[in-house]
Image 1 (cartoon, rainbow, N blue to C red):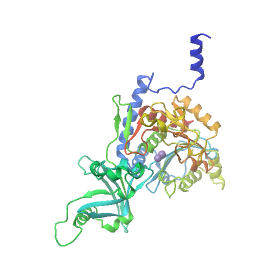
Image 2 (cartoon, rainbow, N blue to C red):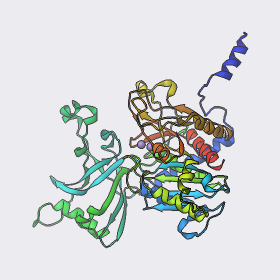
Image 3 (cartoon, rainbow, N blue to C red):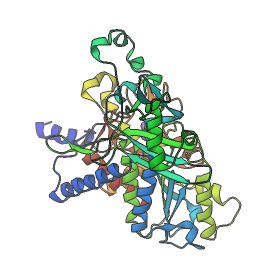
Image 4 (spheres, rainbow, N blue to C red):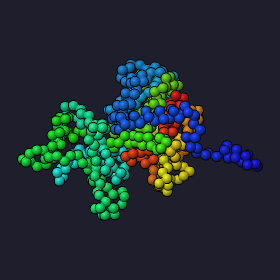
Length: 469
Ligand code: MN
Ligand code: MN
């Protein structure tokens, strides 16, 4: 065999994971960078699940979707959405086929790891105002100290008045931070295991230092903070009882690298899939199967709760779609689910050259090589995995190839090094065929996660083709 024959044969037979940036047309490059700019704008305006739901709803409204409660009947081409308690958003474009013949679903999660306030947060220590917290999701606690944090959330009073708070995002706003110990005095701390380097009860937020101007009472810094909050929002300390306050990194999403090829930003797990899935819904007009996009809450803490993916609120939305398209049989919902297909749109851990030992090079995802197809997640012998059947993976490959949307086949890290789960299993349990497909992320669950602009655009193309075909 000649040298050229062998070269051709290798090209034909090997699955070489190519760098996606090579040989791109000017138009494709333009699309990739423009899409990333729009994505970064979305990221900067929606850091929490409630903000994601709000800004996504605005995007849907601008693109012809209406609240499902406004329609009595639905026909092919109709575009509707349903907001579940301001924290989860389901949208649909009605298809030509009867719904019982199955849906096409792309589901991503809108919540991200962060620092939540406890319900009795405010205290004073050595004339500093401090806030007690309980972290949300799996994070490396030491990464969250001495970085600017912004405060987002709601306080609801017993009379129903709802106060929305966002401090630290505008240029003129103050920020907050959790202080770490100076290295000069950290001898004992440095001997702790990294996991315990900063402990849960040490994640206290610095929130003020001016005492209320009187000699008459104690805890005057705390009093001054409560006075400021009372003047601005009309709240008292007890109102924290019915509050949800989240502290997230205050920094903005930015292009990363000399070549601007990557995005650095907070909460890309899984807002990168929220945005690409949502955008994929916008230009679908009359699909064959009804297209459904789910932006769900509570993924990071186990899918539970009324706004999580285990909640029957999803069934209630699909039920309403069935009823309004004239499907009233008792078994309609189960039949619909058993004929449905879904992409669990969640991020994968990208190979990090700084920590090569944690990855298995043949089966990890790389930045810039396309979407990560993850046939199974789980840990220690695929435990807890929802493994997609080979037949379904093949079908997804065919769809992605049609759209020229690049993908790589991966699993999270080395065998027995750890692992993780996604909402895939909550869909599979309902009888829906499902595969995990998402964007590779470096530094996942850190305050500043990294993605490739190339991969982001591939996810958009892939989800769009899946939903419309
Ligand atoms: Mn995720
Ligand atoms: Mn996560």
